[in-house]
Image (tube, rainbow, N blue to C red; front, side, top):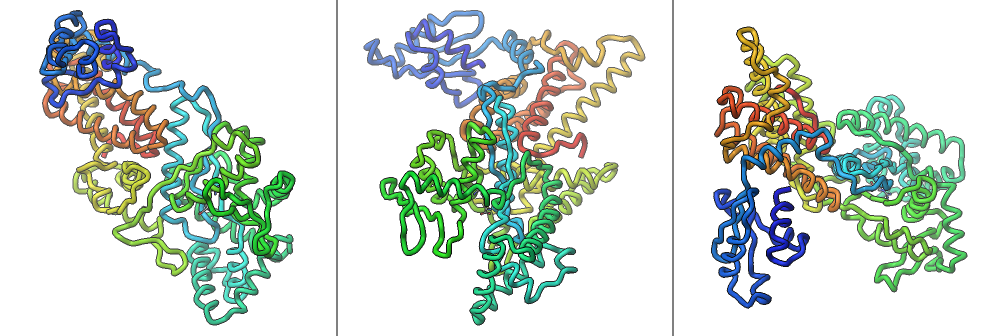
Length: 575
Ligand code: ARG
């Protein structure tokens, strides 16, 4: 906001476009130097003068009641008139529509997210896809798009042949009902262990998958059973993470939609034989061929993704298709998008893979094959237990400690994931994620609880002053601080500027598909608030400045709640 203002003033003086100036403007290294700094190097050529001389010229020309400009070497440092701009900015950030963008113009963005595999554990990769996807969903909505989320369950493929074969040999219904994923995993691991010495197992598995594809009744029944028990367990997880889907459509949903795609590929002359399989060659794109039909006549993951994309575009009317899936599937998506484009679909350009890095827990990796896995359930429970411990130490009299611990523990995991640039690999340490200090979710939540206790104090003080001789009502005090802005302190000013910059952060997060922008913003706001809280009195501030500081506090609390909401993290009132 202030940067825009500075650009508008500088444009006529420098002869540069406002846009260009916006890009050039810097934030001075020390806040005392000002709110913005304009580097004059770009003008040296046209004005045939040294940048420092130009800075002096510009500073002397830049005379308005809005700001003061001083030359400092090659820079023009700009300090805004705090009294005027504090009122203006506070009014802006306090407006009900503040922070909503319209850049999406109601375009429909389909977000493929979570998408775990049936009968396998919900892995850390799926956790990342779920929390990143859910955050993108809310971010897009906030920016004026219409997001549509789809859980593309891995409910089809040869592994179901293995699952059924193993179940037929060693299965136990009771165990499977009680602990579906663990039991399925045990079957899966046992299958792979025993198949090494017993090749008949692989044949049985292939046979079962063939039966399944042909609609054999027993195979279908067992498959449905696996899907149902797995879903029950996944749903518990989604509930804890507070994630919903607009659609849950597994890969099997596309079984009857692949024929048309294969026909289309054939009629366009794109299918070629290779070792008995059918592929689309992608030499021109410098990629290995995309496998469409396997040697044994069955379809495969890419075939299903082609049918899925066509369905999402044609039937679900998606304008933009996002796939929040780990970086290890990069080639797969490049191939799928390339084939779509070969098929003549211009909208292939609107398909985007949103990859993310690997995550380890305290150095432990994920591997479903060998059964050495970290279960998300356990990670969440552990985080909640640790959160409860800290809460009990800090606030032994908190009533709903268990609920708060759930919000803090789960929030710590979600925030701990989202604060990293999504492409980075993350080595997750539970201890630091749950800590109330540092750049963590609990730190932000704790700071929010602090704002609430300050505001509660304000309300109490107002009540008791009303009992004596009524002055200002609590609502005026909380919502109308903009009218008294003499002597705005440095910490208030820094916090207010950060709040006013929120729309820019939101836009950046959406354009880059990067929830970490908002997570880092929430940390910055929490830190700026804590500096303000320690440097300036709020509830017991002098009467003239109190409404300003109180309103600043309510606006900060609102921004924190909104940022955490966008990330899928709860904000308990007290903790
Ligand atoms: N189920 C897959 C896996 O766990 C991810 C699916 C991603 N979505 C997609 N349309 N391919 O690897």
